[in-house]
Length: 266
Length: 305
Image (cartoon, rainbow over all chains, first blue to last red; front, side, top):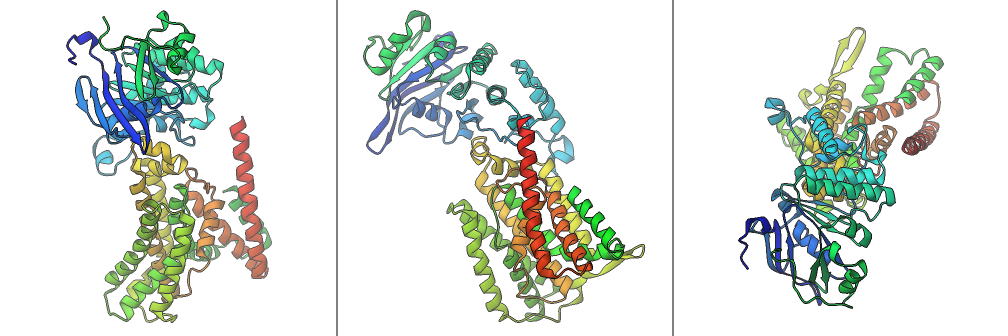
């Protein structure tokens, strides 16, 4: 398994990931390839191991066996902070925002900017002005319309909150943005806004790994679809080449695909 | 704040002795110990915790520092340091049990409340410690502003409030205290070491109780093993009246000073009006419920708009 041709070298690659919980095998030699500049959706029935897979890739758990490669380099994550340091940002299903704090504070939570010189280094004072300005420009670059970054997150709608969480990841990710069910709690209009946002993140050059239950959303936004079943990757398909019904059939095991697609795309 | 001003206006109308500099200086002296304890309590409450042990830990600190000076002949500086170490050790113990053993703060501090009380009684043999060196009670000394005499302890309390307020507002660690109280899981996922943070908060609260112990010793001139028995609930009252949410993550520490002053002003004003102390307690209870109800209602309304 050599990655030679540069344009198709996966940004994020997993080989043979195994994770067991007692007698339950959540991941049974799972592979994954996320290519540069794509939105790769991961679908699978409950228990297919997709959330375990995503947790392994975002550092939330350590797999028992297998290898993760980032830009061709083998990496090991022991915590979400580890993965973040390597340039992988995750948007969590339950948002991971502090509702009483402002948008700017949430964007820089845990990565606050300090003032220059002695006030910053010795007294560790925050540079609130710069954080507000940068937060506003991050939101603007993703066309998230919010009046002021100094308002608390709890004053926002569900879609706008998701926008803040996505903007935070896009602002700090250097390699990959992982999104775990980003539209699960949203209405139709807000979901559309978040799907547009996911495309804009990709168009900025960041590949997106999207985990979703929602087939229409997956088919609307994904470039390729990774189908997980029983802790393995069973297929990688293109939404333009397959029907939603067939994708579901592969997912449930009613239909099988011979080609272990998804390695190097021609 | 509005409540404080209204209360002041009311009592000023009721008693011509209320609105004097001397009387305000007295109110400040009366709230000083609870006021400084409330600094520690606010830090804890902001992380969605609670500290029931604070008053007893303060009493232990005052006994340790006064016995160190009187019975063991240590210098005032060393004696004070011994007291502070004792209160910070209790703060650390609270924080460690909450962080590492994952016990609820209510239970942990209920336990340490009793432990600190018992150690205080055993160590002091329930005797007041008197004959303290002058330097240890110096914070009770006064200086004059016009015709009003102000204690150094009052100035220390105000300075500590400003310092704590500034640090909570302007430093990353301060914002992390709010984040940990508002959404601990989010704080953890964003790489904030919440365990270490909680440990630091309870230990710093212990330091505040140690300073409160010094102020209590300076105010009364003795180490009193019976001190601080209602200070836990009094400090929680001050924190809540000051608008800090008991669910954590919301509030301004200066509010706790205002909260402590509201209670002080009510007690003082009602005393000047000749109201018996049981009625003062009754009114304080009603006040807490009204203040929190008003706060909740206004918050719900502002969220809906």
